[in-house]
Amino acid sequence: PCDLAALETFEFERVLMESTLTGSCYLLGRLHGEPAIVHVQRTAVDPSAAPGIVKEGLESLDVFLDNRPYFSAHALLKRGADALPDLALKLIWPCTDVHIKKYTPQPRRLLTETPELYASIVEPYIASFPPERTAWVHAIIEGRKEAERVLFSAPGDEGFTLLPDLKWDGVSPSALYLTAIARDARIRSLRDLRRAHVPLLRAIRGAAYAVCAERWGVAQGELRLFVHYQPSYYHFHVHVVHVAHEIMAGMAVGQAHMLEDIIGWLELSPEDGPSLLSQMAFTYALGTEHGLYAPLAARQEGEADGFGEH
Ligand code: M7G
Image: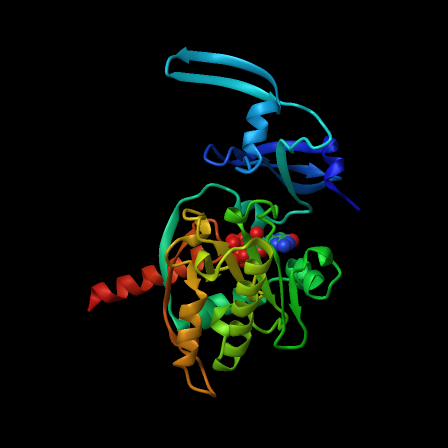
């Protein structure tokens, strides 16, 4: 049993990563004797709350620059029943080496994954993950966790669950970030998609558009729906993100594939048999600490050498 309330017993080891852009950092340490990562972030200012804050929500004001017309100050927020949170905290406990590598700064390199490399290196890598790694996914689709956050759920093998992503606090619509998780655990990544999955993908698209319009007044044209390859978790899911998010790391060319494009490729694939997505080569960047980097890079170097000999 653990919750964030146990953080005062956190035994800090080192800073994994920091970002001045988001005012956040990832700390590595131990909690209850097991490795843990804590993400500490200053909460973003919600524009709808900002006028109230500057008018009457400040406790003290320390002006440190006065050079008319330019003024700068530090301020503290008033404590009150409706006070805004100062920090957003996230904890991964217990965390694995895969988590630690993901949040460790590292160079990134582009690689091309052919269907042969998928079969010989990537598929065995995916299959090597113990089921516990996606336990959180099963807990969501079976309604055991985050049930109160679920926005839409369709049952059955062709079903899916739509809910706010871990990355979104559900407050500001322009930061909207949802995840649609397929129920069928056999679809591990876009490599496993077949033409028969088109109805599932269309249903996800339809639900995302309807829910975002109804709940937050966010229109279809304001939503970017995409799929990661490589993802962090090999249980098929679609990212539903407000178009105002323009520069998130997970939107890099090569890693993010528009759901529309995926539907299009599947529609061009045969009814029965392998899809275009299973026969294509994918080019993407991987951190050099990623578990797939070393084996894929070794094979590509080998091929490059071979090419030079001919
Ligand atoms: P991904 O493409 O596999 O990897 O997406 P990424 O993290 O590199 O983008 C997984 C998505 O699931 C991410 O957007 C995560 O923020 C989100 N996510 C991860 N976890 C562990 C949870 C969780 O426990 N609950 C929810 N709601 N979302 C999660």
